[in-house]
Length: 156
Image (cartoon, rainbow, N blue to C red):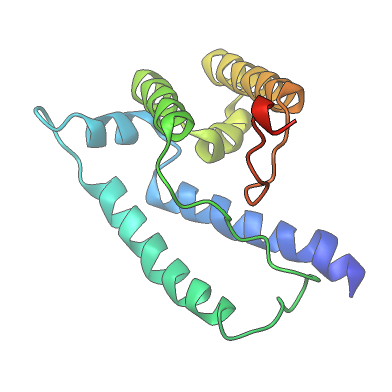
């Protein structure tokens, strides 16, 4: 079961995701940029892909609430944070700028590596560099549990 949960299930999920990107044309930066061009030759196909993804994912998340634990893992890894804060807005803005300038986001960029296009390779290297910098930055920040009491200097 460990081989299935650690290697085969993620591999199959990645293949299905990649096939979906390929079939829908979402690995083509021109399709994504056409979706973002709302005042020009707008192409709504990305919205259709997102709606289909939500239609599939929503029942899956609803099922997670009915099970004590996942079928192929020891526990769920669900987001613990739901509020909108400055890091979320800043990160979303940076992601959007990168997406809008190039027309690629992480999934399609990795899939497009197969083309060996120099622009895609540079994008993925830069993306990986950004991820490494993020991890280093996160590791350097002090971790304060959410439910930890606030201690003031006057408290001693």
